[in-house]
Amino acid sequence: MTADQDPGIISQAVERATRSPDSSLTPAIDPGLRSSPVDAAAPAPDLERTAQAVGGPRGRSIEVTILTSLALLYTLYFAREFLIPIVFALLLNFLLSPLIRRLVRLHVKPPIGAALIVVLLITAVSEGAYQLAGPAQRWAMTAPQSFSRAEQKLRSIIRPVQQVTQNVVRAADAVAAQNERSTSVVVQTGPSVSSRVFGTTQRIAAGLLEIFILLYFLLAGGDLFLQKLIKVLPHFSDKVKAVEIARATEAAVSAYLSTALLINVVEGAVVASVLWLLGMPNVLLWGALVACFEFVPYLGALAAVIVLAVAGLTTYDEVARALLIPGSFLAINLLQANLVTPMLLGHRLTLNPVAIFIGLAFFFWIWGVPGAFLAVPLLASFKIFCDHIESLAAIGEFLGQRDEEERRATARLSVVYRRPA
Image (cartoon, rainbow, N blue to C red; front, side, top):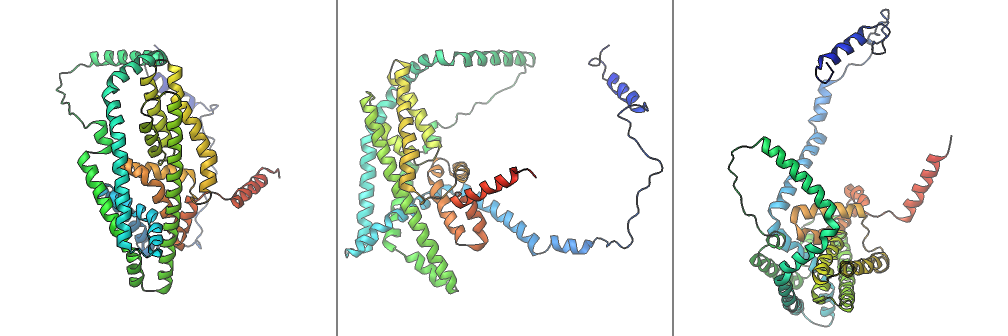
């Protein structure tokens, strides 16, 4: 009989080995050794003081901080349909406020200037949606047949994966046959992919209407909220700090959004031109999608590659020619990310990549696709706020990039650490 058939054999062997005096499992115990008594002069633990420290202001502060953070998370999640249009309007206000000030210098009153800018913005959005609606509808109508053709082209590439999947399915069927039960399964039809990602048309229209109305009042009011905030703050130092935070946030977010908008629009135009040279249809649609995707760091480029790969496979018969579509985008994107963006943005956005990725994942989890677009501007605003508050300076330092002085200090520490004693 083996140990697998009778587990008692293992326990008996371990017991015999432990009782053996020569066994390494038997601990060496000195019977004459005694534990040293506790020093009578040693101070006794002050349990009352410990209880007071745990229940004191610091302990209560930690508890309040945790509860406040949880309440903030729940509020951000459940109020997302209310908060997302407000955040979009605030960011657009940061972007367009310099135009209002220039119009004021030209003796144009803020309400009139705000109306002009909002009307132009609505016209641009409506015209863009109208121009892209036709190509998007035509591609959506031919998508099912195109997807079936693309699946046939990819079978030769994914055949090994399919073989593994079939083996797993066979094994699962065998296990299910042994444990077959009579159960009733209720199948619930979930929302479509487009409904989950972009929401319903009515919700989008209502959100855009709320954004434009709130944007008009923000632009027409100018610095009204900042003036009210300065008025209610009790101390002069707080008033100065509020103005500094507001101006720094507006300057940083406006510079980032304007530069990112310029870069993404140019990249979308270049991608559309290259796809047109390659004979790709609906190039305006793909260029606009690329320009929108590029507002989302990292994941936007990945989504653009996937969409263009599917579009290429549904358009061309040759797999090599189809993969040339996402390959050309990758080449343009690498040039933009490593040359154009660092040269134009420079030190305007000093967020480290880890903080950007964590913030992107967090806001996508809380607010979905709109949160992914809002992640970087919100992180930049939060960093500026932390930099101006002494108690939050450590968080602002963590969110920022590592400068050249920090690199040199890290290099010196590495040399000292590696130096032999």
